[in-house]
Length: 369
Image 1 (tube, rainbow, N blue to C red):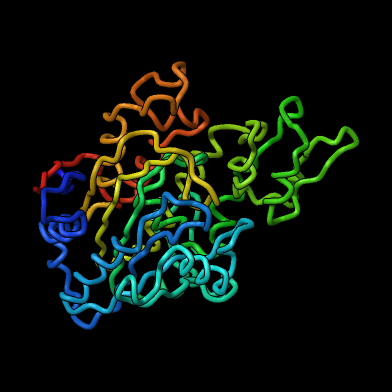
Image 2: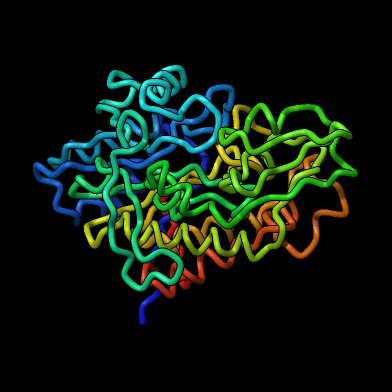
């Protein structure tokens, strides 16, 4: 069986050639024109970034992709679904304001923005998951499913629960409605170390489910009946006092993300673009971003979401860690993702996606000048 092709170009630019020129050349070389875009609605699934975070993809990347889709006869729109946690993307009005604050508009991107699961995050379709072991159906934002073609535009980075965030997570978790996100997260409930808790109140402030409460000792606790396992408290704790109970919960989340990606792809044409720059340790859902773990690497494109994620992982792990980012003791084994988030195992997401027939981790890298 022939290996999946993943096309790659680095971030170097000679005089007169921009990164956007190189991105357009990359997606053309990767064969995006093989998709029939003529008068087709094209969902360009991406993350607009939580305000305060500066690691998200700039709107310029989206415009390059949208302009190429339009040149091929398509009708593109940018889309993402509402979030489960406290933030500024919980409903469509805030979500659109956040996107605009971060520079996304029809003028800057050349296309409209549609929030995939509607005003309150309830506008979804229940889609069968063929071969699903954890989810028999998936709740996918209606606008995402209404599109004729799905293009994922991904900022490749680390993630505190899944190890990394790339094409599969952008499609799977990102296309789930609020109810869908609850379904994916629901068994990954975290625990709080009373020894490490400083009673600072951050986890309480950021819990959208009112699941955090304080005992007589002023230490934070989690009500398991209210917690949906979104993991936001893990990300905001400055004292590493909150973690998942077991790595199996993270593995389950990874598998559910793969199954949601399977449902969101929906058997229709798909194409994937990943930008590996500002590889921050955490998701762009945070209202802040830490310094990049490795230097900017490049841009990738493929028809195979599993192959492109694996290629990005390999490229990041092959890159040197920027001095001062990780303590010396955390740099072992050539796996930057596990070094940053030891409770995660990113391999479970890829292996389950392969099992579902979404693609292959075996790939051939095709350089594009």
